[in-house]
Image 1 (tube, rainbow, N blue to C red):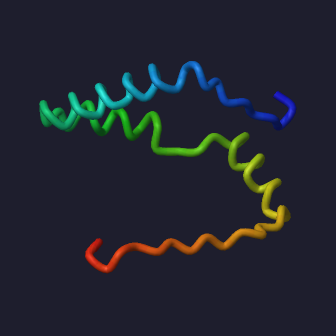
Image 2 (cartoon, one colour):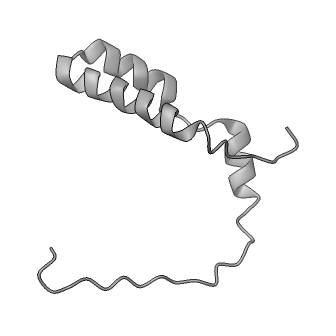
Image 3 (cartoon, rainbow, N blue to C red):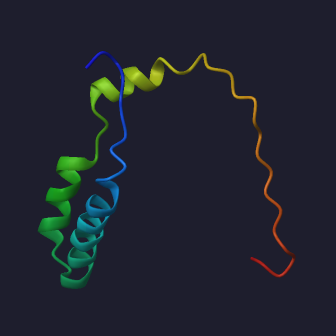
Length: 74
């Protein structure tokens, strides 16, 4: 893949809807086996992605965001 990733913006709404449906069904049914199978499949970062992220370690971060909230927000 050449170490480059792209974001397919058109697919995001459908993919998020599918993910939300799956997670909410697991929560609603209390299907522990399904949850464990889901984590077995998705609870890891692919080696290729780890390498790509490691390659960004030397990129300087010039922004240090500060967030101000109203006093009544907790």
